[in-house]
Image (tube, rainbow, N blue to C red; front, side):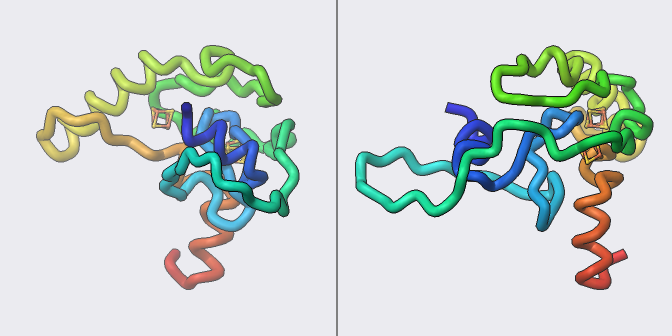
Length: 127
Ligand code: SF4
Ligand code: SF4
């Protein structure tokens, strides 16, 4: 059960052009956990079924691996239509090796440039 699916069903955000969950408050700079339970809760939020990215192309333009296709998500959009996961991984591994000499997958440019991330960082005086 993908956390991102839980999050869109819970009304926390939409899936961005980067294939990351984008929240209005933090952009894609959020870590998710999910709890599956049969406990009864009142649902207070509406599921989000369409993208809020609009005409923004910040992550598409910034991606060093050209992995982001630029497509708008809605419910049912397969990840492959949004991002070339192999190109992302290949690029992120090459960058990590080049910059810090580690065999890990590390990039995050698409998180950094998202205007929602930047608005949050600005609001918190973190830029
Ligand atoms: S993590 Fe880096 S390479 Fe992967 S999609 Fe984001 S910007 Fe592109
Ligand atoms: S950078 Fe723009 S297009 Fe990419 S996820 Fe954020 S709002 Fe959407």
